[in-house]
Structures are given as structure tokens and as C-alpha cells.
Image 1 (spheres, helix red, strand yellow):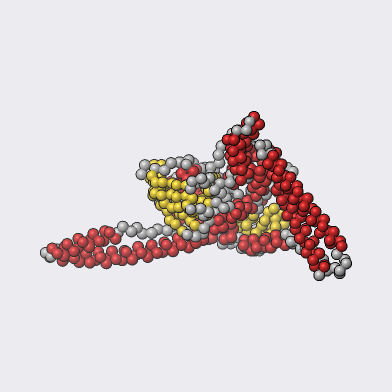
Image 2: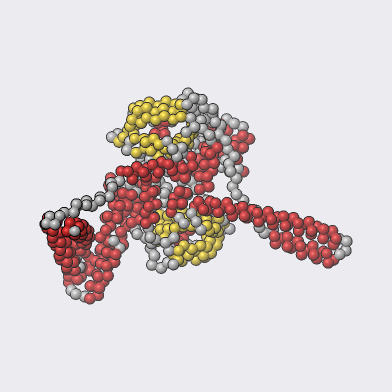
Length: 629
């Protein structure tokens, strides 16, 4: 069954500039599809068209009838005074509407016995139970635990949260809505590693359809099974994961390039033949002239193919300072607190030359504060920090700041690096700032472009310790790859904070995990750290309880077991009697939905109790048979 069908979609915001130009694809029920393309290619526009928030100029969008669709994109505006709890409760508004109608129907049922009212109440009651109306609190607590929305945060006013916290709450609300089709627009932005992993596990269990826009390559590999790439307003389809897409995209490029070169060779051959025919035609051979014209028309038909293009790698090289000695950095007994909250204490670390370290941890644990202490922007409460005598640091903060954002790129380079105009242009070109782009004011650049510019400026510095704080945050895949190309060329020491697992896996040779106020030091790459973490979890997990095997008892020694079996049988019978009584009470309370909710919760608990009593009886009965021989 097809859940989403997009056919010939066209959308333009400026006359003559079509952001979508005949986009066509479909998503089947239960599929996980990734939607890729550079920033500005129309991904978010497409999601808004799918939800009906935006209309298309041409084409058709068809969604499966009866399917509920949910989008997490821009954060909605909620009424003033709404707490996080109030926002989460909006996910259950359809259920709350049912509750209100059931209350009204119950009052009318008390005044008379209208069959239509009774039927409507029965329908609503069944639908309310099917939609999980009696389990909303349990579901909400599970989602909040997974996304680290704690009790204190649930009491806070929503409009006082940070952007990242609002994103987490909004994602939780969407999950609680229990939709059939999930549209995700950068769902892992503002999520730390733990919350992202929880989301991936949730999507593994989710039985509906997922269409996800994401620049998180690790997330795409974990979640999606097919890729739709938007290029020049049209679709390019790839039947596989992100890793498959990368390989297949390169293969298609090489194939198109070979085809283009083959056609160019054919055109050159035909042009040479046509020139010869024209020469003969000037000698008075009319038939030869017609053949030359025919050949020229054939050449024009072959010229329709454009040469495939691919972004060139950045030709960058950091001005690295030679590192002498073994010591890069030493941290001794370092501690830092804000008020009563301790970020970390008694941290002891040593860094040697050539190491590439990823500093990981949940949001708010103090990773950026730790980097600020290294940069002398913050002071520790206790402890010592020492750098080797030849260490020179280059720092790329999470939030890029320029002292004169009104200056254009060339002037920024000239003033801050004291270099010539030609040197500035050459270095900017190596970081893909070319042509008129170099005369844009810095404040007009995107976040990714500002990161690239700051790296371009660091390239000139003589550094041997590069510190990066979330270098790929909010960047599209292409911009992330540009940053990675620059870092790849750097051969000195590297220390970085990141939630981008693709970036971590590519560069880290050592992991520092900041949690519970301590930094755990793991010397090895990211995948080895993941494997070690899984082994530690498995070791800490309690072993499944094994039923104790009683030694066979001799004939005449089974009286105690017989008494236990009889007692277990009576316990099962008593629980089943209570279940029958409870069922009768639920039927009698059909018009009182609050009472019905209490009885339903007791019913669920009693079912588990009966199952447990049956298991006890089976175990004892088996032991009795064994004892009797």
C-alpha cells in the first residue's frame, strides 16, 4: 500500500526560479526513507506541502486515506503560561475530546435510555481504549525518560526553554501523538548521543512510515532503507542506506562521465567528417552538401548531454607548528561547579603528541565549559592545567563570533591576518569562497559558511593543537564533508566535542566520556569504545533467574510438595474468581469512564498476577511429578 505519492510537483517562490521542478516519488506503507539534498534545495518545502501547510503550483500529492501524519519541523507557538507538561498533553487532545464527550453522554444516559446515546458511548469507549486512553501517563513517562525530559523540566514554562530543549519536547509530543506517518525534519539537532540512540531504537519499533530529512549520516544509516535526493528540483532515487547512496552516487557519476566522454569523442569524429564533406561540397557536389547538413543536425542532437560535475575537494593546508617533546597537555585534580551543581571533579588527564580525542557526554554535563577552561575563558575551581612549551592552540567554538561582522570576507582576512589581497583571495578560494562571494559581509554567511571562514583563518596560524566545539552542528552533509576535508589535512593534535557519530568515528583515536561528574578515559577508536560499553552493560545486567531444581524426594516425602501444589491451585482459582467479579463490575460501570479507567488498570495488574500464579503452580506440579518418580 502506498502511504505517500508525489507526482510532478512544482513550486517556485520567485518567478522563473523553481525550487521543485517535477518532483516525483512514492513511499510505501512501513518504509523508512531519507530525503537528502543541500540546504535550500526544497526539502522543508516538500514536508510543508505534504502536511498541507503550503500549496504546490503544479502536480499532485496523495496521502493514504485515514492515515494520521505528524511533522516535527519548526517549533509551534503555544499559549503563554504553557508548561512542558501542558505541551506534552496536547498530544492527547483527541483523547481528551473523547473524554469530554463521554462525560456528556454519561450525563445524558443518567437522564434516560436513548439507544443512540448508548451506541455512541459504546463506540467512543471502545475507541478510547484502543487508542491507549488508559495508558497515556505510562507512555508519556517512557518518552520523557528516553528524551531526558526530567520532572523538574516538565514543570518549567515552555517559552523559557533553550532551542535544544524545545526541540526535544516537541519531538516527544510528536511521538506521543501516535501518528501513522512520521515526517522528521532534522530530528537529531539538539539531541545528545543518548537521546539520539533512544530515538533510533524507538523508530526501530515504530510500525508506521518514516520520511526523514537529516544531515546525521550515522542516523541515516541506522534508520532509513531508501534515499530520495533532490537535485535541481528533481528526484534521484537510491534503493539502499546512506552508505549505499555514497557508493552508488559516485558510481553513477563515473558512468555519466564515461558516457559523456564517449559522446564527445563521437561528436569530434562526426565534426571532422562534416568538415571534409563541406570541403567537397564547395567543389560543386550538391549531394555531399546535403549529407554534411544531415551530419550537422546529428551532431546537434548529440550535444544535448551536459558534462557531469562534482565538487572538487578543498585544497587546504594548515600552517602547522612543529611539535617538540611528548607532553601536549596535563590536567591534575581539576574541578568545576556552578552553585550547588558540580560539572566535574578530580579530573586527571595527560595528552601526548599525535592524539585525536573526542570529548563526549550528554547535553549540560560540562563539555563546552571544559574546553573554555582549556582556552582560559573560564577558571577551574580547583586543580592545575599545563600545556607543553611548544603547544600552540587553534580554537573553533560552537558559536562563531567575528569582531566586525559588517566587513566582507576579503577585508576580514586582510585586517585579522595582515596578509596581501591576493593571498586572502587564494586562501578563500581554497575553502570554496570564489567570485562575488568574497565581497559578501560576514553577517550574511550561513552558520556552515562562518565555520568554514574561521577554519580558513586558522589555516594560516601556526598551530599544533586544534580544539573544535561541535564543528558540524546544523551543517548540511556537503558542508560537513568540507569541514572534514580541512580537518583531514591537519596532522597535529586534535581535541573535539561532537554528537556527530560519523565525525567521531572518522577522527577519534581516544574517547573522553564526561558523565556523573567524572571523565572516563578510553584509549581507542569510537567503535571499540562502543563495543566496550556494550560489554560493560552486559556484565552489569543481572543474570536471568534460574528455577531451583529440587532433588528428587523418596516415596513418602512428597507431602509438603502436595500441600504447596494445592495452595497454588487455590491461589489461581481465587484470582480467577476476582477476575470474573472485576469483569462484571466493568460492565456495570460502562457509563462511568473514570471508574472504568480504575477497573481497567486493576484488570491489567490482575492478568499479570494470574500469569505469575500459573507459573508457580506449573513449577511446583513439575517438582511433585519428579519427586513421585
